[in-house]
Image (tube, rainbow, N blue to C red):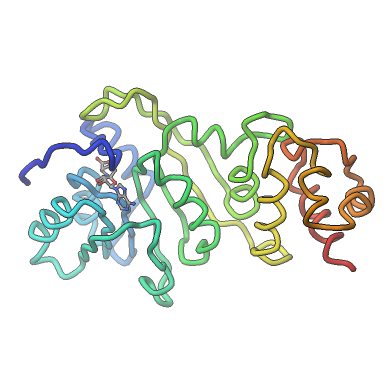
Length: 259
Ligand code: SAM
């Protein structure tokens, strides 16, 4: 493949170390019969072993040049589809129909939040995901109650996805080298929680609107009976949103829904 210049705006740091490429592929464990969606294939480091497994592979790449290069590299292979698109805007329902897929991605920092939010809501299309992020994104989504890193994304992801940190990847494994360490995580959708996705999302988005404020101050403008409902859920209204566990959120959601 011709090598277009890496574009910083698209987070293009390409994985070149064969050991880490192999570790990610082993985590995905691709097989003939699988459908695998890869976001951001770039120069194809992960793509080629995925294709060699005999799996059906759908590539979503925003960079026109890489999409074109991959399209011509795999034009003879009817199991490979290349789509030039912004993966954070893809409707996975439309893309996959009634088939379920594995998802693989080495995600650039600027789209990882948007894509994770999208995956929470579209989780039913994926059996599992092997994703690489900047290590700080994995730390943020794994932040426990009480940690200042715990935020909207942490709670959203905790409700819908089970995240297992597999291993770190050092900057030296990429060209060009990023400034920070990356982490690979295996992410498996959880059983659907009770209560609607929209209501839950709305609640936590208001509750974390101003992280330094108490939960009551964040919620009282939106839910007139916020103080009562917090008390009824056993949550002291002077706490900050980052101190609540997922069970606290579920209780609060239930309480807000009952009149
Ligand atoms: N998978 C390759 C690897 O591991 O070497 C490339 C990884 S590079 C960190 C990120 C890739 O995602 C680039 O190819 C970039 O063009 C692509 N990309 C960036 N934003 C994207 C988006 N919103 N949708 C789809 N692809 C995107």
